[in-house]
Length: 294
Ligand code: MN3
Image (cartoon, rainbow, N blue to C red):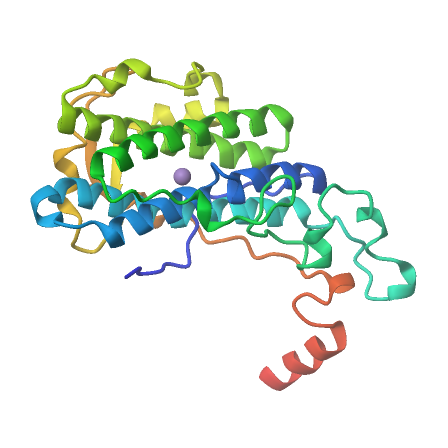
């Protein structure tokens, strides 16, 4: 089971301007085939379903533990989308004033038609995320190979999303996730190496662009974030540390298996209301409620 904290892995900067089309692009990193929902659900199902796990406990601990971290990643991408969409509609509860007019030409109309100008489980083209993106073959070797491929694909999508926008919120999120996704690529490579003896590390990194080229990722690597695998649990999943050993393949720094990120990240952003969308309530109901509750 998951123990939930009302925290975000990093503090996200507030964007300078709303940018609905950047938010549409960032959706790929949430609900695309290689998005965070896919990594979350792949590792979640693979861990639920792993047979004979006592015989391969370090591998079970690794997959289950990374699954828990991915929950924090979907949160981070979702909040990025929410922040970038904040202010895209006019702050006007009067429907005659067409408060949603500024968004009618934005690429993703689901953001305001289906939601409160907020994240949705879909990709950058508006296709809903679906369970066929989950690959649990039942075979550990095949799953680890798939996970390695999935993390490499996720990395390529993040780099392209970064290259498509200068939005500081999107870039801060992508910089952090490039580093954490990089940890997961190395972790699955090490798992395959331990299982088969093959030097998977020779394939790294894909695509061949170092995290150090991205200022928002470089800042985290300077603090050693790329060398730490976190244990997202009170007292379980300890044996993943048997896989996360040795040195980082890129810069030779010593790897460490640590209990949760320092200071548990940051509080999630408190998002502004959207009166034109009745979010969280229409302004009159909200006023009445506040009166009753104070
Ligand atoms: Mn991730």
